[in-house]
Image 1 (cartoon, rainbow, N blue to C red):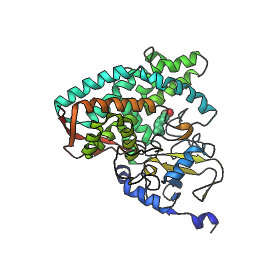
Image 2 (cartoon, rainbow, N blue to C red):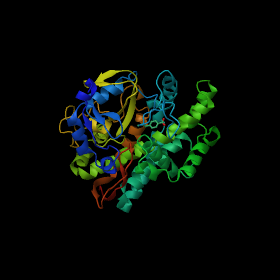
Image 3 (cartoon, rainbow, N blue to C red):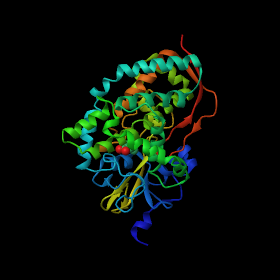
Image 4 (cartoon, helix red, strand yellow):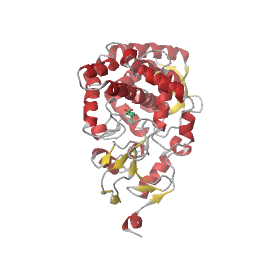
Length: 400
Ligand code: QZP
């Protein structure tokens, strides 16, 4: 037995089992308790579920690289299901070039130009839902809002936009193993890919939007036409479903903790911190992988060049070593340093927009809703990467 095996802590837990994906938190606690870094026998990969090791790995892109894919497959050794993203799944210097373009297009200042239109749509939508009283928080609000405002901002057609959610569901499943959760999500793949390919083209995008601005970067010599199309694909993959889950999880938290809604209604200045607390407690992006580029120690465990490691963002965000009473939803805590948007050079480039969208929707609700009640069993949507609901039946009590 070599030294690695002597101190290797293994588990047969399957982090991609349907039950884990829909109810991960007890398993997260087990994983955090086992060791700083655990060997997942079933997949032959390492995993980190504690805050410290997750953050260390995210911060060190030279050692924990993204250029060999952020899914379970080492894309140097096998062809991935979907051609690698040219921002998410690249390392510097290639990553730097595409990141620079997206940082500019999605800058806080650029995002602010959308505020008025989004505020108006939020008011219309929430007015309608308050009148309706009985709603599905996920379908009627958490999906409806981002599915309108983000593709509008990109300049995409309004036809068949729900296919964006089908596409991202496949893509996020694709970072995990080819299990039945993945297989069930790709049944309509031909129609979905046809829509995506068609709508990533320059000619498909309305002038002035984020999409057109990406193609402006082609004209300025910053990107090739193919690279621009792949960045539009990144918008489609990362720009809607993540926000849908963040918004759905917000409603789910406030419906379960009505006193927190009351607290926020009495002090609106807490909206931003409240959203941070939602994504800490119910992180829309639960996991992704890195590939180890050289022999290194993490949490005292020796890792080898070529090893894959799964980073449990959602577990790190509930680590009792970092957050007091981590399983409690408390909008007054300062959830500083959560890793729900990642950390380091790949930290979420769209987070200003995700935050603005959610703050606008929550503010529209704060103006109009006294409380939410859950009126039926919430339905989980299993996904190999994302955590969120497919359905959240609720009743709205209007504010007067
Ligand atoms: C997904 C892409 C949380 C991340 C995994 C979200 C994400 C970011 C980028 C892309 C996809 O570039 O395709």
